[in-house]
Length: 333
Image 1: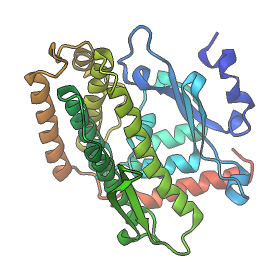
Image 2: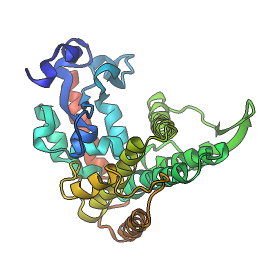
Image 3: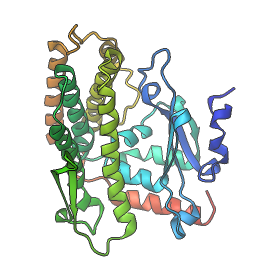
């Protein structure tokens, strides 16, 4: 029996947002990266078209998440918002190995064939910057048992500010002074707070911006929670995936390619996962830090010398998005 024919995946056929609206489904996580081991979970990721009601009516569908099968399927319009910012969790869906796509319909093929239109220099901040911050957090979690709450919040704030800095290029009604972040005491604990000043902002614009910031916070909380376990297997797994983020970002900046399955880096990544770079006190050895420093230097150089444009090809992206959504309205997909 094929994976998606199993009973637990029947929601793919019965959910009104899915079924024939799905344009692609692929492996996510370790199976997508080629770093899976015995017992690794199978994650499914994908994209489904917005419905006519979403486009012309009152629908506000953004994604389907099924925790039982580790499945997350983005709505077409939401996926585009994330792809434009070169969001790591979504841009990788366009660079999987052909055999990893469990469903791939014509519109999905067209999208993947045109994936380079989403690539730009902002990958250094959204992709490489995210990796750098996660590595630094992991380093601290290994070397010190406690990480000050205020510093954690400032990490989150920094990630959000990197993304906010790209908003004027993607949301024409946005100006930098409309969202100001800071860390303040809330109910006795430091938290990131936002001062927002907006009037007559299109709801879809506001939803897009908030969704991006929520994604950053959710990913941070997920990884930070796991770090607390102090379990060597988990710590090494996270270290491996964070190095992978650097390597994927370098492929984007240096080669203009999205390479999700890290076959060329497999041995290195698995050495990290298997604990080769970890010492008995749970911290990493000097070889790991040498690797990290080398990746940071390469990223700094690539950011300055990449041939990618400052912004993705917004005109081409918009034309493709409109063409697809017009087909949905005409029921011709």
